[in-house]
Length: 311
Image (cartoon, rainbow, N blue to C red):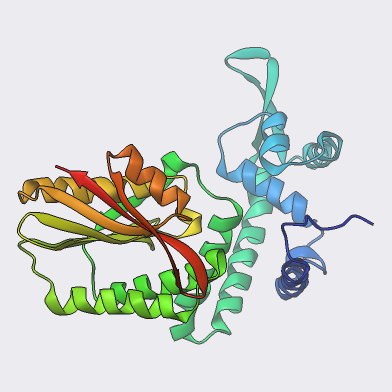
């Protein structure tokens, strides 16, 4: 018997399998698909042929991850029924392209409408106010299981809005507890910093940035006034899903550019020696470690560090 990867909790595997059983039964895959004589795979092949320009069989094998022999049998059935035609590829006379015939479109059309009707019936059972949550959850599942490349991600840096500082506090509390074992005192510290920023914010000398990836909050950073010549970088954080996109560097660069434009002479920050990714960002931007001191806090033995960037 195969065993799950040691990096995947068995409870998580069990939850995914339970959801698969629930959803496949809920959408009727376990019975005749769409009350037709077609299998789910056959309908999907019809869908691809109906919605794409003429394409080669190998394209279907690749895009649908089908066994070539299985697809060949499906295509022979469609061709024998008069639903499928082959034509010579204009760029290569040795290759055949597949397209649906008029009879093929006529066969597929009621299946497509039936699928739309069943999706509508599924949503109709959900209260209207809850439907956006359901759609957002489906979108989240799709994006997490099939993430876009970094070049395809939609990244925005924007000013904080109401509710953002609460999210920043929550993100720090959850992430630092999970990854570093910090206790609730750390979340309390971040909440104090966030509250002070909201109470004392001076737009002439201070600014915050919230990073969004594909429309969801993914990170933050804040630059606050320490003195007439010194600014302080605070609350730099990224959700794990947003790492690898260069966001930590971009957020730090925004702070540096703002500080220079305002005439600050230095930026200082306080961090921990165990935060290696953040320290790497600071070092690569010219920050220099000025002080280091062991101490006990947040349920851990730590080493506090003060970094500085001369502008």
